[in-house]
Image (tube, rainbow, N blue to C red; front, side, top):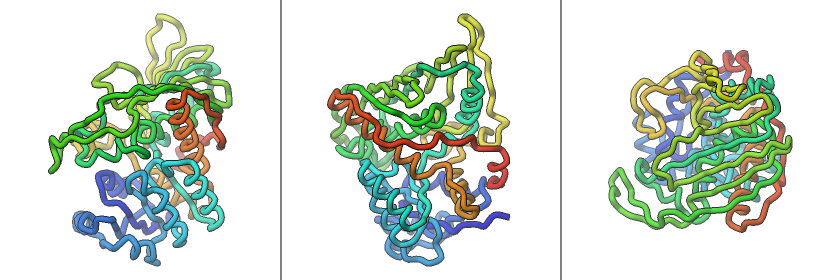
Length: 385
């Protein structure tokens, strides 16, 4: 029987619903208290989920809390994570680790000094879709992968988020910080660490209009680039063209495609947990489908529309598995899969991509990390209800 870790939530916004739902799926985490810089939000959250609302300072000092769940906006991730570590708490944060590499490096150093765990979203790469893709890549079903395409493009979060300004802010805004972690973490999981990146930017719509909530129809200025076109070279020699954009109304591109010496592969959405993998080994052949809907973290678990805009009426979303897997790793003194080294490497790629695209100068990736090991069925069964 696993120990149930007592979790304190900081940041009671839009994403918190998803993490409370994770308690239905995993057997070793329980959010018992919450806090927010806006205490009214904390009180509302506490009432909804029948937990206790505290101030941020009170929560950080609370001796009952073992893990802090950091769901604040990106520019606050560094400060909250550092305070959690300073107060002797393990920490699991939404992506990214921080909004600049220097701060991320500082957090990793502090966690090692304090002998505390850092966990960081995304954990979607632990789902059936990316894990099945990983299995096929490592079995060399398409041979050695030498090329790839990754593509994310949509109009932006302003249509479905009541407070979208942070996604378009000067330092923490843009699609690389927002969606890059999903694609980059998936690619590192499949191909290993990256080596260098180059690219360019396209400036999109300068003003956006809020689509929902009490500020509906209010316009705001865009303060950051909203389309990045980059090329990433991985240490194993694979070259991937990555497009990330908030300026595309609609498209028919696949999320990720990998091209090997023996065939091609379509990898499902790295922002979700399920989805089929497709392989074609001969020009003109029908793509072979590898379903994931019977895998433990690939099964459809949402049957009705959630308030989360990226959840359709039928899909697999097991966000929170990274937190549960970290809790299991703490108890068993193992390295967690959504660990600080992986998160720092992804942050390094994020910052290097933004710099390369803005300056037109290729950037070397300063860090490396171990390629994540497969998430075994045995380990999943240890934490799933």
